[in-house]
Length: 219
Image 1 (cartoon, rainbow, N blue to C red):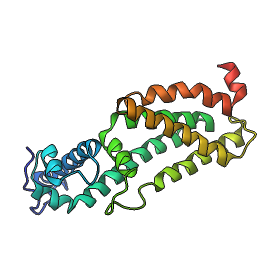
Image 2: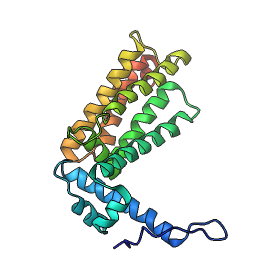
Image 3: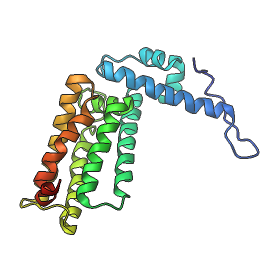
Image 4: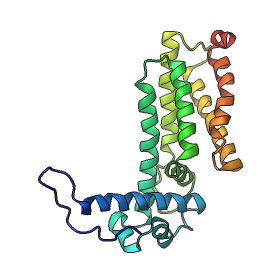
């Protein structure tokens, strides 16, 4: 079990490195985040109990309250971590020297791999689709923000010629997200997202055929 002695004042060594007390606090917070994720993937937000989260983390409820305060705080931390991890995939893709279509496909593949393997991301998705009185009301906003991200990548692809479409960019961006979300939902139903990378890879031929017919002929 992780030590619950996290409330002690953290001190810095002469070299400016954190002392073990601070390191333990960071480790405990991460363990609580992972424990909360495991609970939120198994139970709905109203059903999840703080003592279950603490048990999954191998620590006490007192330690949980020290780090997060209450269940809403824990849920918000999971949701933030989910978006941080998904945004890290986006940043990695955007920084590549690829065309718009290649970046769009890489983003879809990267998000699928993350969702299929990362328990915190999975828990964030579960939380974002629930309605509960004390859950934040903006948990679904990122779904619409990702449409904007897809729109930007598709517009770049149109400008530099890797994407050839005869309809509005906004419509293509929305339906690209619909395809991904559909694959995500089916994969969750079938095997808790394990099959998501395979499903989106199978969609790639369709996406390329729809967005870049001339490239599809060369594949």
